[in-house]
Amino acid sequence: MLVGAIAATACVDSAVRTAPFRVRPDAPDPGSLAGPFTGRVVDSTTHAPVAGALVYGAWTLERGTALPEPAGAREFVGSTDASGAYRIPAMTGVPRGLRVTEFTLLVYKRGYVAYRSDRRFHDLGPRMDFAQSENQVLLERWRTELSHARHLRFVGGGTAVAALTQWELADASAELDGTRAGEDLRPGRGEGQYIVAAQLLTEADIKARTKYDGGFETGPLSDEPDTATYSSQHFKALGRPETWDVAIRLWRLDPGKAQERYEELLTQLPGIAEKDDIANRSFQATEGDIRGIGFLDGQRGMVVLLTCGTNQCASIEDAAALAGTAYARIKSLVQAPTAPPPAATGGTK
Image (cartoon, rainbow, N blue to C red):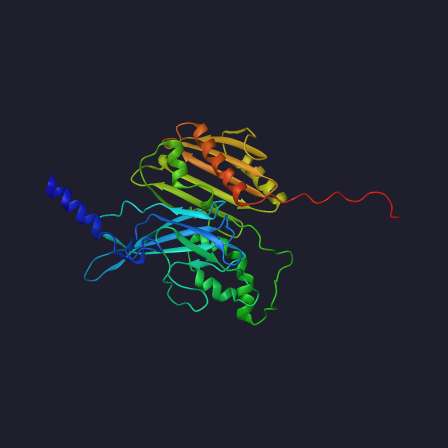
């Protein structure tokens, strides 16, 4: 038994390459590529916390020693809280024969220059100040003279990232065509508040409600690609049938279009019962081994559909609780638009 334990420990240690960053900003010891990772995101000028920023972590996997080859990747998608803090749980369950060779953190918030843990934006040089724990991210405000095309290349891939950066594509294309006017190309565009489905629910949220003790593989659903107005996140239970899966879909639309999309869902899904206990309107749906909760946030122009297998969500109340968590996340990340002031009445003096 002792020999087996030692061998197992050796396998775990060799599954993760030595990290190029420190465990803490004030410590010389190397960190762990597996994590966990913690830090705080603040405005570089005011040092005010930046809430609601996308936090995207990606692990790169490799197999083989003499001739190593890529073996996929794992990702984490989350957001900073009201204090600007983020926490990325440790990556676990590295398959036998694979090892973690790289971890990259991206922090993205519209109105700021993105932050990457491996390199800087302005000169693309290597970043040397990233730390695994207690890391401080200083986000610089975006300036009109900066290049959106360069910024998109710097930010890189990732489905959740691509959905959030859709708004930059018009400016990037204009730059490449030589038609950039030096200001916003589309009227009415402020900083905006953009979120994607992956920010609405986490693995920890699901486990806290359902007591599930396994792991998930996460990523977008394959039935429909993410766009500027639609995104999805699939929590695929590892080694379990689909009845253990959870999925969440988010549509971000104009209020009128959001109402139409919600009405379409009411006609498309079987076994619907309207409840209106989440946001402005909501429903419950059941079909076979799947429980579903949909809701409409009319003010923010958002429609959410959460589906959960019956092994994961033992009751419709479990699914409703997860949908409630997603709605709470929306309210914390996106301000509701303020109502316009009432029109003046009466004549002028």
